Amino acid sequence: MSALDQTIAPPDAERIVAETDAAVARIGAARAAIGKVIYGQEAVVDRALITILAGGHGLLIGVPGLAKTKLVETLGTVLGLTARRVQFTPDLMPSDIIGSEVMDVAQDGARSFRFLAGPVFTQLLMADEINRASPRTQSALLQSMQEHHVTVAGVRHDLPTPFHVLATQNPLEQEGTYPLPEAQLDRFLLQIDVVYPDRDAERRMLFETTGSTETRAEPVLDAETLRAIQQLVRRVPVGESVVEAILNLVRSARPEDNADRKLAASIAWGPGPRASQALMLAVRARALIDGRYAPSVDDVLALAEPVLQHRMALSFAARADGLTVRDVIAELKAKIG
Image 1 (cartoon, rainbow, N blue to C red):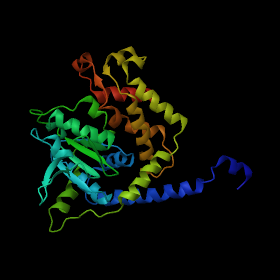
Image 2 (image 1 turned 180 degrees about the vertical axis):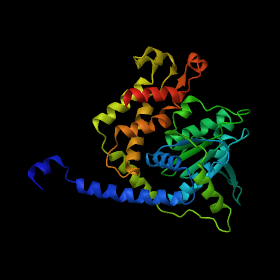
Image 3 (image 1 turned 120 degrees about the vertical axis):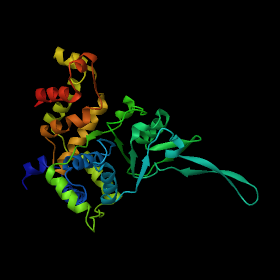
Image 4 (image 1 turned 45 degrees about the vertical axis):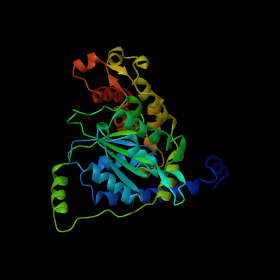
């Protein structure tokens, strides 16, 4: 290596490249293992992996029967994480999620309180139909998602690491539901829309899932390896053009920062800085999943919708004209791309 090359390349460049190559191979093996169980949902699987590799939480939205629960179970197995599932209902209490204190009475009559940990004390929590729980219960989960600990009777209890929430939401049957507040929606790194599989995937599903044997997921990673990959994601370099694309996209989604008056009038409120942070992490994770050493502007455009759509709302006039959030994001992307 010449003196010039030594000046340009950092001393540990070879080690970083080796770590990246090893991580890409592990991620590829995990994708293949998930693909043996989940059919026709490649985009959904990739976005779920992006969410976890970026260290965030995901909101899965889709009608019943699209393997959302199966996906979360498979992710827990393949990634080597302890996983638990909570079915959210209107009568679910915060203590049913975070845990509670019980009184123990010893043989000598002495009494003491003991903390019984709830299902949130896991590495991968599936919050099934999260919008069916009351706001009080949703707020209890909010603290866990943001701070990675819970407080019971004034005592702090740290959650396991890594800790991820993959929540599901049914877009149908909105009666008896409690819409998630904007503050909690903002805590989800991505909104992952789960759509119907194509015909070929559904055909394969018919044979694979109704025969005498069914393919089961197998562990590929473990929690320690996953944490190392998550740290590697944060070290993936991001070029100035990608940073500018992220800033331009997110800031243009705010009505006060959009020079296009017609487009600005369509937006009631836009995403905050957490959206920029989410997009920055997500593009790094997407690049790593695709086996690239750095993200591109194409990654920003590909992840614009899942990052922004739950962090902004349209004005009444825009909704009256039949516009959707996806329509507005498409216009914002066109100006960036």
